[in-house]
Length: 431
Image (cartoon, rainbow, N blue to C red; front, side):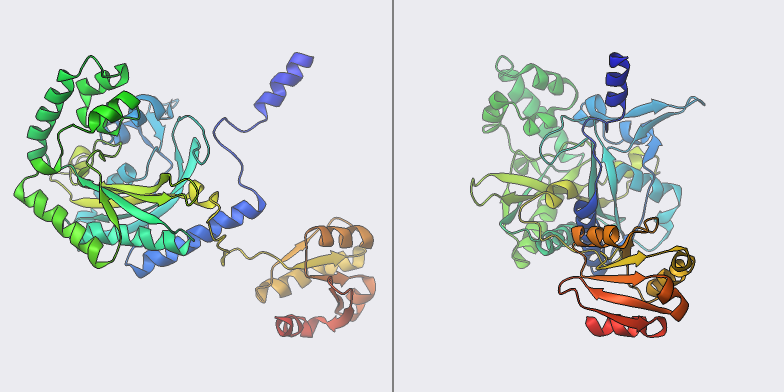
């Protein structure tokens, strides 16, 4: 019996690396998403929402073999009908699939989108990193101009600043296009082969399938080795050099500080040309942490079935790290308002009419908290105090007969009888 209870308790906990978002933290997520949407709209982005589940090949054909996401981190499943599906490990591939499926290439280009929601990766859970986490993405699809790279960076930068971030900087690099990258990968591969004896096993495997990923390695020996690795910038073709130079000029014009990081390649194989991460520096330790990242992905469309390449660029903001950060400004949501009034009902006659009173308040856009099943006045007042409510509305049998309520100030215990017809006017005068 004890073993059964132990097993039951284990089954009733949340999945490792996933958690419930409750109370104040829920409002903080909501507040961030509202602010991010508001800013994105001002910069010309419009909303889109893609499914949490996609066909597995949407990600395996786009993110690429040799990446940690495809090799280790995707949550996959097989349906009863035999379909192989995956929980989305990122937003971009699903967005491009939607763009192609709905024939959006026939619309005036480029198209600007924002979307947000949960992402799933079977990663090692740690502070600020979960197996179900939230991202806010902005993408431009259908345009190759460097100003679009600058636009998505600037929009993400503005959102982070409005959320309370300071000490921000950009790590940026260009990994070229499919033409000039061939020579670079050849030289990079030769460099690592010369040092194969000191290359860790995980990076030896990457050398076989995706040499660029070695630049992103977290292995200490590889990090040291990468300091002398060939640089992508010295292998760029004239068009890629021009594009990258223009992106940097836009950053300088917007007074966004940047650092050219020759080892920055990002973890997904579909990136081309610009790759970028927005870093925040800890004031006490000086350590930098990435809180947003992205880049250009001009070849993803063709990988997913488009007849020709679709130039595109995007950036993702990791919301969990922001909401949990001490610098986060605890943005208050506007769509979901936190109630300041506790509604107390006493007796059956009052409860009969109580939903009508709540409807009056709803139409006046005044949210309330309440325990509609309770009858005891003292118990309900205690709950109101515990929830730090500013006011209480008391609705008993006498008030139900007289179409009135008792409006109580929880701070000084004063109270006044108010007619239902005057209730909204009375409350608005308190603000």
